[in-house]
Image (cartoon, rainbow, N blue to C red; front, side):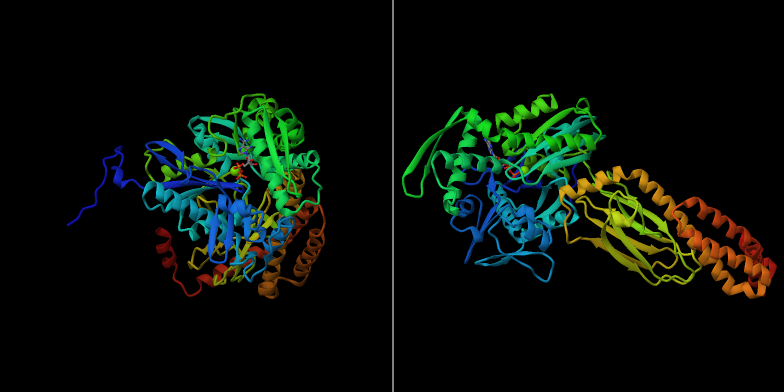
Amino acid sequence: MALFQINEPGETPAPHARRYAVGIDLGTTNSLVAIVRNGFAETLPDESGRHLLPSVVRYLKDDIVVGDAALAAAAEDPFNTISSVKRFMGRGVEDVRHLGKTLPYEFVASESKMPRLRTVAGEYSPVEISAEILKTLKRRAEKTLAAVIDDAVITVPAYFDEAQRQATKDAARLAGLNVLRLLNEPTAAAIAYGLDKNPEGIYVVYDLGGGTFDVSILRLNRGVFEVMATAGDSALGGDDMDRAIAAWIMQQADIRDDADQRQLRRLLRAARAAKETLTIAMRASIVVERNGGDAWHGELTREQLHALVDSLIEKTLAPCRRALRDAELKLQDIQGVVLVGGATRMPLVRERVQKFFDREPLVDIDPDKVVTVGAALQADVLVGNRRGNDMLLLDVIPLSLGLEVMGGMVEKILPRNSPIPAARAQDFTTFKDGQTALLIHVLQGERELITDCRSLARFELRGIPPMPAGGARIRVTFQVDADGLLSVSAREQTTGVESNVVVKPSYGLTDAEIERMLRESIAHAHEDESARRLRETQVDAERLITAVQAALYADGDTLLSKPERTDIEMAIAQLRHLRDGNEPRPIQDGIRALDEVSREFAERRMNAGIRRALAGHRLNEFEASSKD
Ligand code: ADP
Ligand code: MG
């Protein structure tokens, strides 16, 4: 009989028993894969020694090409060569049309809200296209390690919402990868630098990539990274510098600006090469072919480059300022600045960042590998190769999650910044007598009123046994898994009827929208508070009116005299009138008045109720049951 072997606590598993799990940075411009071997994280190169895989997928009639070869073909085959697909992940058809306005791709709407891109080989969704990139990286890792790789930690921008996260997970599943966790990119960068080993601290992650700029402020507290603020510019990056340089070349080389697609691509390639050379050299020579066929030879100095890109770099500082302000921090509160993204190699970027934050940024880890390295370290922990809690890492919920309650208000169940995975239950009850169904409306946001929050899902709980208002006990549980995906369930406690929903919203929020929602919640905190008080009072009024009316209907004729009944009805009418006002105080007065005038009636009903309940029972029955 075979027995399972169990390691002695503290002992590392034998090499053959080791499970590999990779870390993947699925980037807008470039993607990478890394693995932890012998305790060190390293990114893995392809056969030609290149670590960065351009995030470009080219569809041919009967082949799919990913990476450098696809990038090289982008100029001659723009319709079938998809780059920057990350921008479309988890977005609806309309968003994608808008984002893709300047791109050559042809979008087709399909029955499922997900947009697809038309190519010679058929139509593909952003999820499928991303899956090709992931498959390529998975194969690369399997070749290098001569092992099957199933598990991965994949990074996503901190501002990615649930739809974008879900789309990333779907892409991984299509690629045959099991996602151990989706990890926020800035958090991954912080892990790569081992910042999570510090007891606490506040860190800035400045990420300037090819097409996007993101700045995040992280707070580390007892091993938990919390995203305090994010800001950025989704249309600013190294590519914009390339365009500025290309424009300069055109001017110098006297190339007319009606250059065709192919000529433009050539110019951009030359511009990018010159820019990257100038990171290590003071001058770069440039050769570009002109349309006539002759070549232009020129030179760009670092100084000239700086003049061309300075305003672009300057543009990254406004989001930095905004993030600091949103997090209510001063420069002195910052313990470290981490540089991420290929463009932060540029000396001028480093200089500007250092000056702005008034401190030397962390640059020791290659800025285009740092996110992948962090993801690999995290994957290694999650797969159990690293023991103990030497890295207990959690992310947080970016916007509060809650549900709609009476009066169009949001009751927050999981507050913003709760570490994930997170779960919380809260009990609710019915509003009306005999209510047998409940509509659960799930919302995201910081504001008090549902109209100011984002609706994520609605579902119904049916089959609640008819009971007086407030009699049913419905436990609603919110659960956010390690990847930031939300599931909500509702269960009536006495009968056990249950209903649930997994939230996969079909439209994404942009980083700017999240930012706006957070900003508005702060700006409206006071206003919201009084709006909430008003709504709560209105709901109380409504509840009392409903209850008293039901009582009048049931027992009014038998338990009340005519004048008594008239008094109560007048108080109801009065409260109904007051309820529609804008001030809570008069409504509260109305509630008190109706409460007082109907108190006697309520007592009579209770006594009558007890008499009814007692009829036909012997007294000792009740004595017996009250003993236990
Ligand atoms: P993304 O996160 O969007 O996938 P990356 O972090 O890979 O992007 O950054 C790509 C950008 O970094 C490109 O614009 C590229 O030109 C730029 N870049 C890479 N290396 C250098 C370098 N040595 N000097 C200047 N810019 C660089
Ligand atoms: Mg990146």
